Amino acid sequence: MAQQRGIYRRKDSRHWWISTTLPDGRRIRQSSGTEIFEEARALLAKLTLDAHRAAHFGIKPRRTWQEAVIRYLATKMTLRSYRDLQRICRMLDPYLGAMTLDQITGDTVWTIVQGELKRGNKPATVNRYLALVRNLLRTARDEWQWIDSIPKVRLLPGEVERDRWLTRAEAGRLILACPPHLAALVRFALATGCRAGEITGLEWSRVDLGRRTAWLNRTKNGTPRGVPLNADAVAVLQEQVGKHPRVCFTYHGEPIVWGLTNSGWCAAMRKAGLTDVRFHDLRHTWASWHRQAGTSCDELKDLGGWKSRSMVDRYAKFATDNLAAAAARIEDAAGRVSNDASTSRSCHDVENEKGLSLR
Image (cartoon, rainbow, N blue to C red; front, side):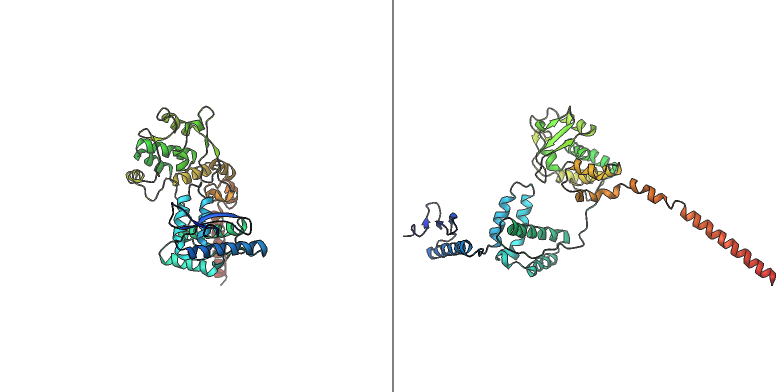
């Protein structure tokens, strides 16, 4: 009887399972998540009713936040930031875990903001949570068509942009303080602007020292790109030849599979007399040095593999050559003002003296 109703048992599970074709034509086979037959039957009835409404009346079934999270994370599994997305979803679960998507309103977003600020999180951290909520809801509306409307999610103002980069002297001290394997990574990062994962994942099959080019397939945004190698980068790679048959950078002959801002990095930082510097700041340093040397924002965008110009505009402050002519328009203005003032005072004094003599 249970099998005929689309509910059955499996030997490898203590839960009832559902297997049926819904009124909208979808074939489902899934666990009911319960050991109680009546609850499994109720779930099947709900799925059937939702599908019937959607097929015949255009009424969309109510989807839960947790359903959306499962599907959202499934679409992001290839991203290098996947673990961060998982962590943020876990942090949001106390606020949204029991809700359906249509229950999420502006008040819900306000509750998240106030709750996280009270926990002591900075606006930058809260904005990461809000950005995920906004992106997931937009995806559910525009791509999955699970909901028709979403609340407006505004990011918090007051987020301070990180602006840490190294001077040439600081970079030199850091390289000297690093052990050999880490010094090579630092030098290559400063020469190419590559991210940590791009460097540790670089393979010899993707390097052409003759053409001074490397091709990256493990980038942050998932888009492969070519990297021109200057003389400094080529020198670093030549030093690594023969250490490993596959990867370019190693530690004791083995590939580097851990994060680079670790205890070894912190020890080198202390030895170099530096504070508040992460390995990723070497990319900011590389970009800042380029702008100071006259590299245009468009050139820098292509060199660094950024998808939009807005990501590069933050470095525009380091290049002021285009404003030199404008700055020169009032050169020596202070001197002229001073001379004019002195002349004016002298004339005034003469007039006063004449007035006194007439009296």
